[in-house]
Length: 445
Image 1 (cartoon, one colour):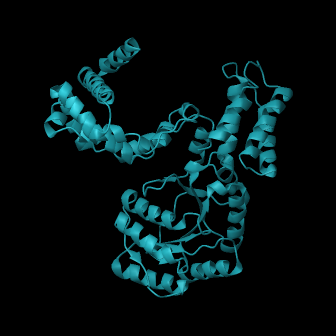
Image 2: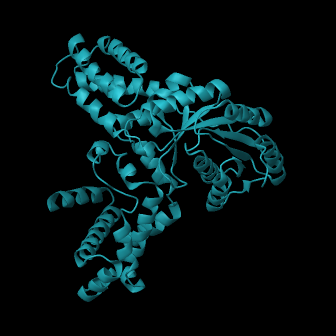
């Protein structure tokens, strides 16, 4: 995400490194590279120029503190400007209706149907809501079936009227049905087209008028770059929607759409899609996105993802097992499953400061733990619970059963032993434990 832009901005900041103070000359040189980086990220020339003009005005008007280098000051100014360009603060959904009605709009192929299901899952699992999905795309043959499959996957009812080709009536009937059944959120998936046309706009406008939604969200594929911004403006002119959803952001290394949609349509980005899984949806935080673009990581989001999977009772049980040196491969496997629930491994590591650039050319897929899981699953219940019994013949059998090598099995067992030892050190020695662990790690390198 944004690797290309981040790399180019990092190179631009190097112009100021080594300078004792900011001058009009070195600022101009830096901002020339910043503007080029934005243009390469598919930001329009007008927005890129406005952005760099604002940065220049602030940079030349700042008194550089002795403790802050010109390069650091420029990073801060650009960080603040990026945050403002993307909207400043996050914008919440309006869910005050009974039921709250959310209308989903966008072009065909933008990811509307998948996002609708992701949003239902998000509201159900994280907001305690009772959502219902509505199959309002009556033209694309697979759309209704796709929504049904996704609804079944997340345990959410999908309202359909088989054979009907009247999306306005379907939408109106779905609201009545939702009230009868006690659903407090209705998410209406509508038809998209390959391009904007009058018929499409008239239909989605008619649905909006008929159901009076609290939220109309425009879903756009971020990988289409500046075209996404142009489409967003055309839809907003007709619909006056409340917010934007950027899908496929994990595949977009440029980021032009995320950077400029707010400036063009003056509507906030509310959610971003970052993968295919139903959990792969994030609230859009402009400041956190600016952090990531500038290589500062996103520790807050990482901690929030960890907290979502955190079970205090299970954590206390695990702590007792660690203290008694009873942490085994069953516990190890459970921790891996918790990590996987948090999202794509590469994306998670990229939230650590400085790691985004380091991982730029590293391929870390969703199957990063595949071999580890295969090895553990190839162990007998006794071997998982009592790793000390893992002798040479057992390791050979496990390697054969998991399709790995003895070296990989040995490496995993060593990593497991090291992890268990360090975890026990932290648990039993408390304050001193972390210091001992860090010293041991340093000595082993």
